[in-house]
Image 1 (spheres, helix red, strand yellow):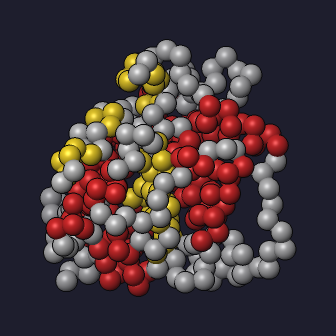
Image 2 (tube, helix red, strand yellow):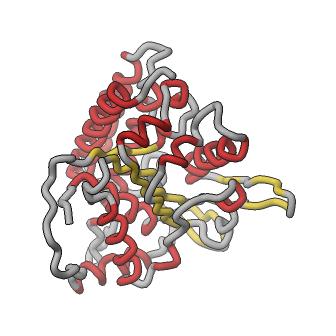
Image 3 (cartoon, one colour):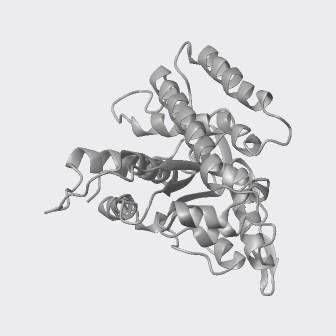
Length: 316
């Protein structure tokens, strides 16, 4: 076992994104996230992925687990109507990353387009595609989450500066592991404590009873905020948007900077969801700590993305 807190955090965000999917909005953002854990072979990328699977089974939420790879754009959409909320865990994502290339095969390029659309349609409607056997994938408020991992060399071989303009990579939150972290022998797997199992099971079972109705009589709610948080949201928006404004129109960082505030809203929403209190009158609400956590994480991500693009992304 190699301790990698960044990878564990990325996996936790993807897990909570799937668990809370289609139940909440916050500042126009839904909780679905695309996570990419990046580190060399043997540095511990697999442990968080396996832990998420184990926790899903412990709380009886195996139905949320999706696929481990995509063989076609149709397979990507096939299960959406019946399973609109899911977490796809992709162990080696270099093939997926290559799909963002403008020179990719039409089949790969379509998968990239669909993933971009699914990410954006999480607050509205995904109309699907017409296939040889008829329409596929029509879904209201789809909540597809990705937990992916790959090595720096595979990342470098899959992405060029030209690829960044396609938009898919800009939708991934990237976490970089510590390549020098030491491994430890793990004698036993630590199970979740009973309280955590109960809380996660309640979050899984929670259904808003009022708010905005979206399908089949179900509701989703806009996550409430405590007093004073709205002003803080405005300050964060202006601070993050200034990073976009400061970039040149042809900057390769522009697709990343353009989504910083959206990322911040998603993370604040997930943070608030993780503090679920069944005894409280307000079971879910965003407070100052959620926003601070989200802002710090987004700034970490922006710094990491800048470093990775400078180091691994090439012009050709």
